[in-house]
Image 1 (tube, rainbow, N blue to C red):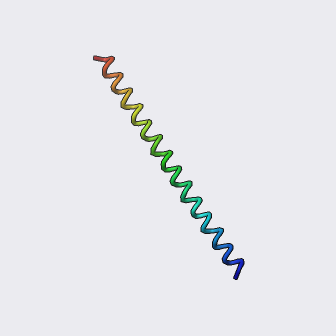
Image 2 (tube, rainbow, N blue to C red):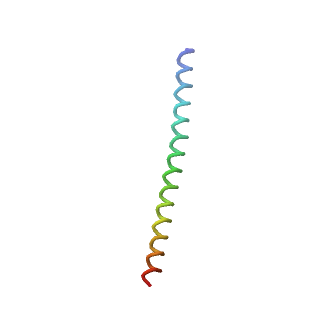
Image 3 (cartoon, rainbow, N blue to C red):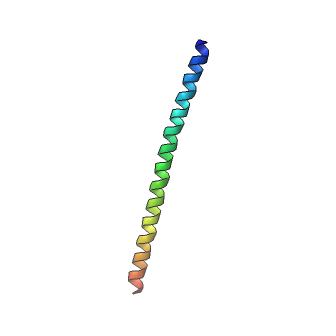
Length: 52
């Protein structure tokens, strides 16, 4: 019985760690996506200004 409880605790801690990792990865992906969008819009604005 004691072994089963300790195994359950280990599994729950692994799930919590996975959840935190997923949150961090999602934030990184969103940040990268936003920076890519910003850089592309800035490039478009620069090219429009130079063409005019």
